[in-house]
Length: 169
Image (cartoon, rainbow, N blue to C red; front, side, top):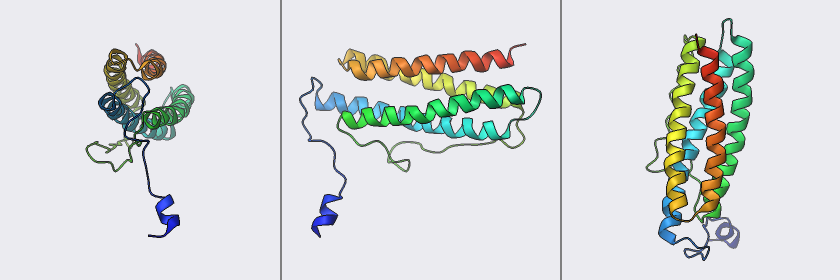
């Protein structure tokens, strides 16, 4: 193999890092973050597609809100992926092994109410997963991941408040 090809091979950090977290803990936390990253991409794509396709009396409100949310979700993907890398692991490739990377999009024919309800379900799922991984990271002493997930939870819980407020009778 040429030297250039060797240099371009993907590598993770050294197997052993001395940052106060065991290799096993870093691996477990990274796996949880990888699931969160894939879920964040799913929600980003769905939110963006609903942004384009929403119709009805709440069009403008939902259109503006979903634009704010998909922009925030896009920024979050970078933050989450960089934390996985800082823990010495690769961020998942969307065709990754063991992670369900499918995205089911049924925007066509959905009402604005159905779209918002669907986004509420996905944000709730994200909150549950982040709470689990954040608690686990905190218990293992990974304060950075716990702090990052606290910030992400803040976003998702506010998003849930905003989305629910749109569809409340």
